[in-house]
Every structure is written in C-alpha cells, then in structure tokens.
Length: 333
Image: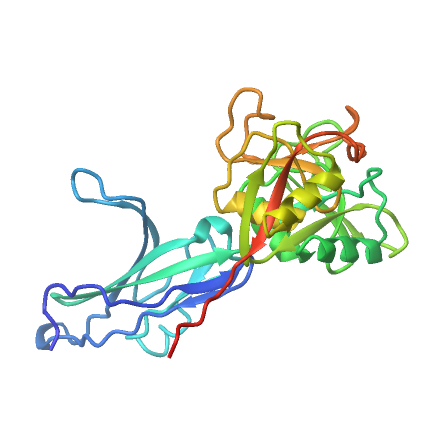
C-alpha cells in the first residue's frame, strides 16, 4: 500500500546516453484517484535537482515540466509520450540531449490528496571539439577529417551533436566538416568574419553540403573516457619524442586530443602546456585565471605563430599529458 501523502523516492539505475540523443526517463506510478476525485486527472511535475544540500536542507531545483490533462512542453524539448493514452504513465522524453542536461530528475505525481515521487539520474556523455590539421588552417578533405577524428579517439561529429554543444554555449569561428558532409561552425557572438548566413544572430552557420575534396577543419565527437589522463613533467621538460618515452615509462602513452577533451570535461584543470599524441601542445582549463589563456573554460592550444596555425617544433620543450587504460581485475572465485 502507498502512503497517501508522500512516498520515499525509489532507486533507479543511472541512464547513460550521448550528446544530442533522445532519452526516456521512466516514471510509472500506481496511485489511483480516490472516490472524491475520480474524474480529476493526475498532476505531473518533473524537476531537475542538483548540488549539495544547503544549511536549510534544500537542493537547487529547476522546473522541467508541469502537466495536468494537457501536456505543455518545456522549451520544446520535453514531452510525456505515454501520457495521452495512459494518465498513469508520466515517463519524460527529453530530446537533443546537452551536457548540461546531466543530473538528477525527480518525477512527482499528485492524484487528489495522494502524492508519489521517484528519481532518475541522467548522465549525458561525450564532448565535441574543433580540430585543425597540424600544419595549417582549412587543410582537411572530408576523408582526412574522418581519419583525424578516429586518430584522436573520436568520430566526426553529427550536426545534432554540434547543435547540442552550441546550445550549451559553444562558440568557434572555424568552419569544419560534419558527418553529413556539410560544413558548419557555431557562433554565440557574431563579429567581423564570423557573421555567416545568420548575420547578427547567434546560431550554427552552415555552408551546406560540400565537395569531399574541399578543405576545411573538422568537428569531432569523443564519446567516453575508458582510462585516466594525467599531467606529467620532469625538471628539464620534454621534446615530443622524450614525452612519448616518458609516458611509456609510467605504463601509459601520450594522450590523444579526444582523451584530453574528455578529461577536461570531467574536471581536469592544469595550466601547463603538454605534448599530445598528434604532436600538438595543449592544456585543460576549468577554472580560468591569469596567464592561463583567457576568461572561458576550455582546452587551450599552443600554436607556432600568432595566426593560430602550425604545431610547435617537435624539439620544443614542454610537459606531457599521458593516458593510462583502466585495468579491470576479476575477483578470485
């Protein structure tokens, strides 16, 4: 029997999905109307909760959807697909998943004086990053673009993945290939040279479908980190070759660009440029500060000249970012 006023949340396993996908967060309830409220439809409320409880015992909350009889979508991305046929199916569909959608979702259902609730954790995985050829800007054919993403522990990004990243604030004035053979770039703050086909409005600029032999940069999508990225250094610093050897001596290898971006997304913050496997030099910043490359979080890239082209000479001396695979140890039986 259910408590007529309040139920403790059930324990649902986390839901894991990648950027730009559609998720269905389950919420099926057993409450039925009492005799006095038989014709009254249930009231459905979905809320996102996050952060530590404050001194008042409360967490931060954001309303996602409130429905009673007629469903109204929140920012056009949420619906209750089973609700129209079954008023006791409050499962929430959330489309175009963004990294910022990760969190704990609470479903509350009220039927008359009765109340029931449940929670569902959601983790949106993956990160989109811009990639430029080692020697110059706009130097990748469509085939090259797909290849360099794979070499950097990623795949060429889809338009939906770039759009989801733009919705979370991504801004980059560099045209890059996407998986549908279109060339696009995301702009939050239109500026000279970055107006594109939307002029003064924010948006993802689109050059349309292009010949595969044309040359651009690329947007890659890295899905999930399978191991650990860590910063490593020695007092005399390292060339590219010695950085690779140094990582191997630690049971690791130089990290790829995709691996560093995933580690940055997970919270890695290090204001020290270091070699990566593709011969680039980068460093991850989650807490912007003086002399660490700007006012926004991101992965910084060290270029050979002020035009932001060309990787440093392989004999230049920097630290290293190493990657070590996770090792799963099977328990003895």
